[in-house]
Image (cartoon, rainbow, N blue to C red; front, side, top):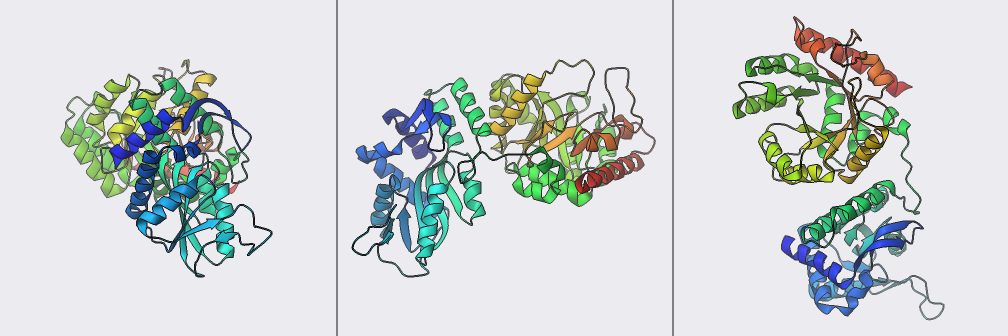
Length: 473
């Protein structure tokens, strides 16, 4: 099926069903990409292929129905072909009732309580589907699912979910762009322009911009944020922070594997994340990574390798392949562009367990060269890879807006002093309350003490108390 989907994407491009440029949309904003699937009716082979893929998709999703209904008008011929081939009854929902005859809005033969699957071509906000659902339900039909050719990923899925409708897209815009890029039909500049547009134009069912307000993340309970997180590893991290009552990430920056594993076991019960620098461990082996994962499972924490990837995609893919088997999370610089994220995403997809990335948007060291414009670009990258990016490394609360992203803030110490090498420290309370941290990195304050367990417990308590205070404001 994958090869047929790739062929379909290329055929869409070749016949002009997908266009790139500057287009005025129905919702009133201009878009760098436009879909005109209406022209498919002139290409019977494409219509045949698409209808077969849609029916295969319905079956693969395990969906059952008594009748089909295509959203007028583009989806009507698709629904017709599927209905004929599958031997299913079909309904037609008119856009307006006739003022003569039966004056029906829904044409066809059905019984009240019949389950209906809606077929649609392209979804932006989901408004056309919701209008169809309303009319079908008014006639006594049961509607839970909709199968669509392409999801533009601008909020339609969430808008439908709020109304109890589950959307199952055959293609997403992300998938289409990747396919066309691999086929040499479009370049990275086009993809980046579209991703920026999609990230900045999330719409509600009325076509109005979805306003993401900073206070929603700051005040939103962790478990609610976990539900809103498109990145599965971010959702897991938020649940761990909540369940362990620990916004603590311990940076175990040591040079021997025995020391690393010993400290990880000591702080594991009190940390949500254990952060490593495997390249400074002089006797590192793959077995060390395996043992670290065993500790992570035992004490319910995630492992983050602080590699800060910043190279061309091919090199990063090779580097990440070595780390991915044992590290749940890695840090990445946005400087090389989206290729670094694309490389990690491709490697992560080969694993059976989810993986994620923290993008470095800001640094805690004095004199760093990160500019506000660079930070904004990294924020844009996070929006372009929602299922891969778990959060941002940031020093300010206005960087991480989406409630599904986690803000990781380094430079935390009870001493609140500088280290002579440019590192600037903040207290646990300040980093959570003033800087907006969800997860705070403590290194030497835990690792270099006589009792890492007691130190980790102290930081855990102070960070959690600060987070609870923030949530109550």
